[in-house]
Length: 346
Ligand SMILES: NC(=O)c1ccc[n+]([C@@H]2O[C@H](COP(=O)([O-])OP(=O)(O)OC[C@H]3O[C@@H](n4cnc5c(N)ncnc54)[C@H](O)[C@@H]3O)[C@@H](O)[C@H]2O)c1
Ligand SMILES: O=C(O)[C@H]1O[C@H](OP(=O)(O)OP(=O)(O)OC[C@H]2O[C@@H](n3ccc(=O)[nH]c3=O)[C@H](O)[C@@H]2O)[C@H](O)[C@@H](O)[C@@H]1O
Image (tube, rainbow, N blue to C red; front, top):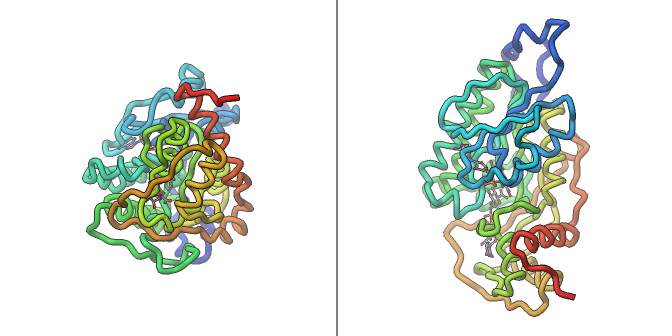
């Protein structure tokens, strides 16, 4: 069996990948691709499911414990013959027969991942171990949605994949940052030791329709606040930066990574960089010019700057984001207005 290509910076598998089910070699076997999406009831996961379901050759299974996700995000697929939804916590083993695993299950908003930090670590470590065990048993390819948080409060700017990060191992964000770092380690250990075909995406802040309205992340907060005519809460100092990627671009990048030949890790994000004060001003200008902007206290260890270097994604995946922040925010506003039942005036 051909040795899997890697991105050149990491060791390739030393073992051949496990073989898929013998049925795959039967000429009567249906050639549908069976895809498991953990965390598929969440924000990015449900958009990914929509895209995967567009392909009639795909059968999609979602496993989610609904901690931050909702069946509502998947309601158009419930009952569809190529779709299955399982209430399942990835910290428990899962036995299903699949060809690909998109492993997204993990709360992403800092408010939610800090709510039960021990559970967040278990989800990242035991959950990823379980999904790797599954990949090993059935010979599936597995993609992990890691995060730019592995770079911590970065001392290198913009961040490329060779940067090892600056992460506090004992802080209040560590359950998530360090959890994802261990998840990446597990992915590479299973790849080297057992030949599992792995893909790692390092996702930078992603926004778009279907984010929880009270999710606590900055874009959803500002949009909901602007629509409700409540002050936009810029956490101190307001000069910290983030780079925001629209969800359709993100899904496109994840699928290209899964289908391509490179293990990653690969940054997937939009390099457009904004301070939180600039973001608040843009939301004010686009959504509610009357709204007030106020400064509020920040939380510990908040990274001061974030901007992906996406050279690798461009070269290896032929991917780059298409939607600019100014074009993405109104699409999200429309969804939030519908859910908050506050139509645009005029
Ligand atoms: N959105 C971003 O900006 C961003 C950035 C970096 C990385 N990521 C990663 O992308 C993935 C999806 O993020 P999102 O923004 O869609 O978040 P989300 O909170 O909307 O979705 C996460 C989903 O995982 C489910 N989940 C959580 N713990 C689980 C468990 N133990 N078992 C089963 N299901 C569980 C939740 O119910 C939810 O449906 C996460 O792994 C996150 O770390 C997201
Ligand atoms: O890019 C990433 O890798 C990470 O992006 C976000 O993490 P974070 O950037 O901390 O998320 P937000 O809560 O949206 O905070 C962004 C910035 O906005 C600020 N903020 C947040 C909320 C608010 O009301 N006001 C405000 O100024 C925060 O202080 C922070 O500086 C995601 O939620 C993580 O899951 C993800 O891993």
